[in-house]
Length: 255
Image (cartoon, rainbow, N blue to C red):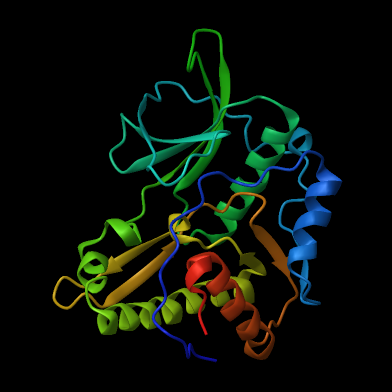
C-alpha cells in the first residue's frame, strides 16, 4: 500500500502528552482508538515495578545537564536532558515519585531493552536532584543520530517546492513504515505514536535522501503489544491511517 494524495502539510509534534487518570480508563480509552484484532493491548500494562529490579540501581556521579526541549512540545511529567559526564548520553527523568510514574518508567524501560540493538540503556535512581534530599527514577540511553524533521535543512529546502516536499513525504512514509512494521513483526511491539517529535531522520548530505529513520520515546501509552506473525495485509491499512493522523495537519488532510 502506497500514498496517493496531494502534498501534505506536516503537523508538528503535540504540545502535551495525553493524560487520563486511572489505569483502567487509560487502557480502555487507548484500546478504543485502535480497534484491530491483532492489537492485544498496551505494552507494559502488566508491569509491576514493585516486583522488578529495573530501578533498584542507585547511580552515583551522574550529572544532569541542560534540559532538552523544543517550542513545539512540552511533557510536564518527564524531562529529557543530557548527562554531563558522558558525551552522547541522554537522561529521561521522571519528575514525580508516584506509583503511576514508577509503573510507566518500568514499562518504558522494558520496551527500550526489547527494541535496542545494543545494550546501551540503563535504569535506576539518582539522589539530590533537583533539590537536596530528592530522589528520581531515571533512564540513561544513547543519544541517537538524526535530526528533527522541521529543524533539518533538507525539510526547509523541500518546503519551498511542492514536488520536493511530496518526494520527501513518500520517502518518509516508506522508511517509517518499514521501521514500525519490523518492530511489530519481530518484537511484537507496536509504536503507534510516531508523530514528528518521536523519530529522528538521518539524511544523505549529497542529495537529502533519507538514509535512516530512528524511533524514539518508547514510553507508555503510545506502545502496544501485537500478535505474532503480523501480516502486511493487516498492518498496511492501519499504518496508512495512523500516518495521516499523526503527521498531517488536520486542515490539510490527505485525499
